[in-house]
Amino acid sequence: MHKRILEMNEALKPTDATLTNRSLHSTGRMPSVLWLAALAVALGLHIWFPHIDSAVNDTYNVDVGGRNALYQFAERRMGYVDRNHKPLANGLDGLDGDSTLCLLGPARYPSPREWQALLNWVNGGGKLLVAARWNDADLTIPGIGPRVKSTVVKKPFTLPGAGKRKKSANPPPSGGGTNSSAGGTSTADAEQAAVAVPVSTTLAPGADFTWKTEGVVDAPSFDPSSAEVLVKSAQGPQAVRIHHGLGWIILVASDFIFSNAALHERDHRNGVLAVKLLEAAGTADSIVFDESLNETGTPRVVGVLLDPALRPATIQLVALIILFGWRGNRRFGGLLPKSSLARHDVADHTNSLGNLYYKAHHGTGVLREYLDQLKTELRLRFATGHERRVLLPIAEKAHMSLDEVQGVLAGADAAARKPKLSRRESAAHIRKLSHLRQAARTAGRS
Image (cartoon, rainbow, N blue to C red):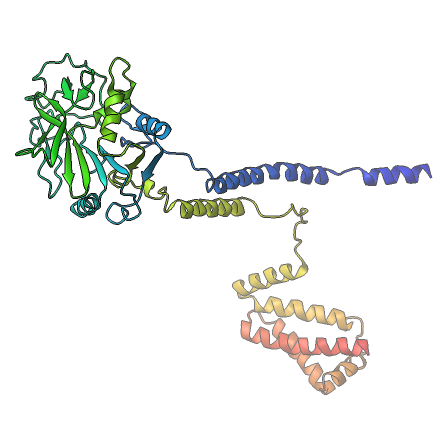
């Protein structure tokens, strides 16, 4: 009894193969967990997608040249603040005419078709604030007399390395307030960055501002009934309010006053002037910042796939790629037990031997081996003188006469003694012998 219990305990002990399978199963779960985590993160991007800061100076940018500080201030102090991502050519129909649409140094200026849509919207009672880029001040509004022209002499295109004027998308730190020289930028050299110039304004008289510009508002003549100068420097007007149809256009020669760097200066009241310019169009509680020109004005390759319109399809594609990687990395389901190695049977040995005989053209050897095996099975080696008695049941089952059966055996024996035998002749004799062999097995069963 004790011996039987020991045998049962030995049988219940896990074998090495079982331990190996368990270890493989436990370690095989980790890749699946990682793939599932990646899939969960990809699907979670539908709910929350991180904002990718771009190089443009938009209301999302928190760098010195961005407009994020102005947007946050307006969002806290004004009744309605929003961003516009729709194309200007056909996206202004749903915009309220009491709102002020702000184009603050966009990455690209509107196209003629977009200008036409903007002017039609302003003509119907809309308010538009347009600020030229402070380092690229050439701006012309079709159909409007005042325009922004650059006061910086730009060098023509030269070969690389020939000392081109370098410009930065972000303005440098302030170089001073209203104490700058009056003629600091009127004839500035092409390699010199814009500096602060003194300005005067009717919006906040007597206040100290930092106004950086490389342009000036140019107009042949100002009609007080249709245009009003809001900010002016020694070089000329810097901000002009233009009456167009039932609405107003605020044209500003520089967007620096709206940047994060300008609003960060505590010793200047730049924020006051920025807010006054936002309110100059006639509304103080509804502001819309346009981002469509920033989104379409920068060269993007991968960014197109991350556009809000295409982002869901991109996330689904990423999820499919993760599923494909998971499926190719590890099959679904648990691990199967290891199968035993396949064993070679006698048929493989026979096929290999037959191939060797065939390649060696040794038909005589194949026939001799088959004839010897048949004689052994029919016990003809031990029935000398009694061959007829042994072969008679075989002849009956083969539907042959006894003489025909003996003739088949004699012919095969004579052919096996030849020094060389073709494969065709060998196959013919083996076919006849196989017929006798099948008949002998049938006679044996009966």
